[in-house]
Image (spheres, rainbow, N blue to C red):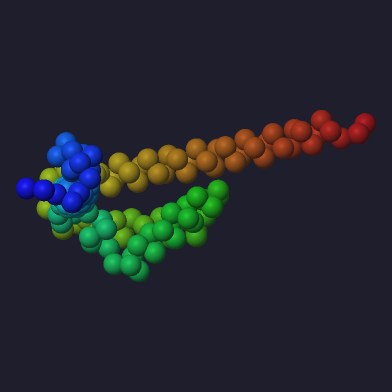
Length: 154
């Protein structure tokens, strides 16, 4: 059978058909890209499913207003250096919020912490800390008087 094609082109097509090779390569690349996207999606789904916490996570319990209140308490706690009535009120609100959040918890570690919390011991620790702060305040006042005395001109 006689052919009108150039013999060199025919030989090249027999050895490595260019059109078919390009199409096959592009299909392989497409298949690899699709499988990569699917694998990445599966990994993301597994990651999300494995990080979901049930029940006792504070983010699941608190509504946005309570989260804002807790953030404000944390901000107030870092910005106040002197223990005063405002700080005590903020601390009391934070304690009440924490208690309301976790009092009905079913998490074993939370129940253990709540059972181990001795309010009388905590109150005595706070009273001791307040007494220490008062003593430090008195010492500071005494030191201030001594420094002023030494700096007086004779």
